[in-house]
Amino acid sequence: MTSIDRLISLCPPPQTAPSTDWPAVEQSLGMPLPADYKQISDTYGPGTFCGFLHLYHPHAHTSWTSLTGPMPSTIRTQLQREHEQATSTLPADPQDLFPMAVTDNGEYLFWVTRPTGSPDEWTIAANQARSFKWYTYDGDLAGFLAAVLSGQETVSVFPSSLLDHGSFFTPLAPAADLTAAQPEQSSAMASSSDIRAWARGQGYEVPDRGRIPTEILDAWQQAHTQ
Image (cartoon, rainbow, N blue to C red; front, top):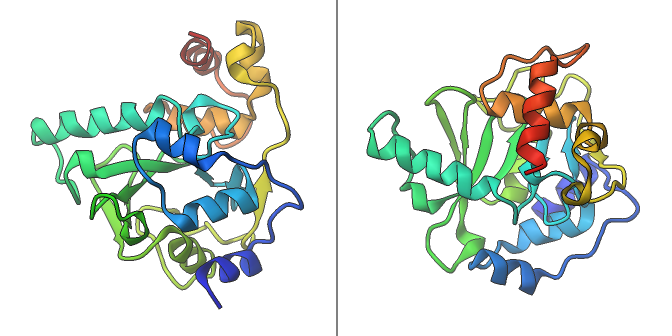
């Protein structure tokens, strides 16, 4: 059984998922992508694993989880700044770390893009939210997801409660393109978990449940309607 087969067995995918023009996506990014990532994306579409892990996707409904949106470049710029200021120890050169997932707590997952041009050999690194703690996995994304969602692999920067409700995948409901939304519509089109995860990634303190503070909603709107 391949890692993809194991992942599908652990987390049944939705019946349908949007198709992707991968050559166009890779041309836009200026690099090839791992075959397992493309298969996962084609199988599941945009959504979350265990209501926690958001894989970046070309068809994401918000810019903060879009593989081809501004977030990967923004995060790499931040890593480069930290590297130059020697404020953190990274598992690889910042230019070799490409963000490809985010959690509701604000952790980012990266491909370690070495060797260049051989994406199927890339490994995984994760950075704990608002800290300099890193976790690394010496394998591909499909293997990582299958190992984590089966409980075989414990990720030190993830909460111990990750699998309390089992392994499951939640697809995002169809939504209009946020880039075409009016400012007053953007927060309504995004789910509350989307906004909480984005806010945590920006360093805000956000309650797990209940009403999202107005200042966070305002910051979300400003960030996504420019």
